[in-house]
Length: 250
Image (cartoon, rainbow, N blue to C red; front, side, top):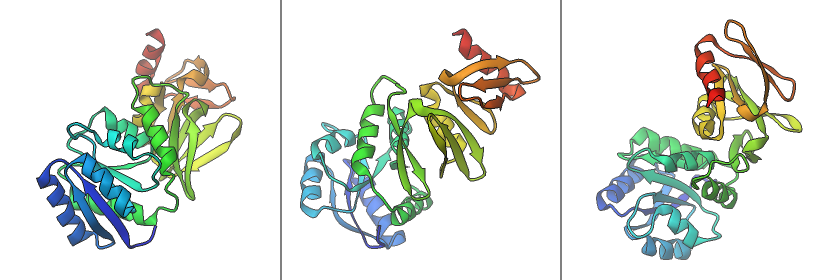
């Protein structure tokens, strides 16, 4: 994305709206705010009229949530940065779909980091990510859902059930997948641990996150080892062993 980014801000709270606009104008010169809206219905009209590069969108709004607005908006390929007053279930859905989010009160550093990521983004894939988002905000946590995974040249959309395990690799992570070579992704293992825990993934070791459905055998030891269906053998740390074994007693 170029360094001349047009933006629309949508938030039902006037103070939040004014605060975000001020910070963008003072500290994020690449972003040009072309319109703001307190009502989602007004925001929809402004988006359709101005066609901005990015929408800063509050998740919690009366009558129509941020997710509801996107449903109404339909097929539009703008970047989206969600804003929210607190951490809750929706954040997991936002993260698994590789959208950015900011928690209020929004710090200048977090805002600048989000804008910098926006400037360096090469491919939006907004429609695909919105489908991932829609699937993941349902009550059912299915491995048939997809996850948007950032790589060095864009995004890949993978079936969660096709991820056998993930291994820490410095500032990256290496994904081991069903019927394809390993994939190096630009996200830390701890991020995947948080996002994928509801999908029956467990961090058996500081460097290893495994999909429990692909474990073939556990061999006892100081910590132990798990044998995966693809033939990989992964160490289990001593401090995670008891919690890991409890998962199979539920």
